[in-house]
View 1 (cartoon, one colour):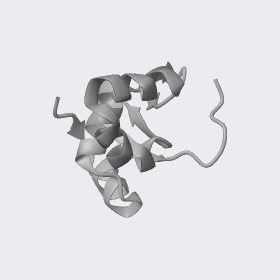
View 2 (spheres, one colour; view 1 turned 180 degrees about the horizontal axis):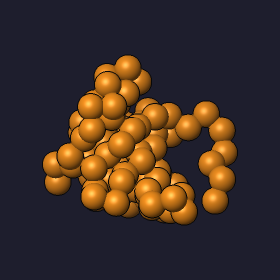
View 3 (cartoon, helix red, strand yellow; view 1 turned 60 degrees about the vertical axis):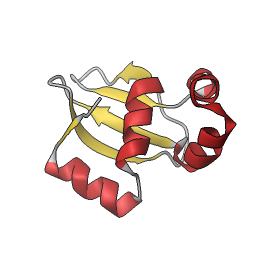
View 4 (cartoon, helix red, strand yellow; view 1 turned 120 degrees about the horizontal axis):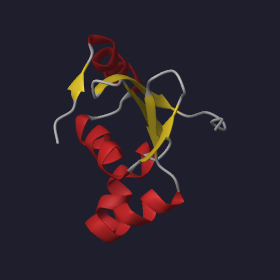
Length: 92
């Protein structure tokens, strides 16, 4: 899957050191929650981390471990609006 990125998301990926592979992994395995304003927030939780381990093995888990605190905001048209690293708890 090759997500469409806004210019803002492209800039944030570069600034925050989130690779395109990590973003695709996040979008493929991450848990989706809605922000009730039209966007979807995708992030890793325990279940999605286990799915990554089962699907890709322990070597990939070590490779992408540093991205497990990443999140992506996806618009209604499936374009990634922004990405970042969670620093604390995300509200539901």
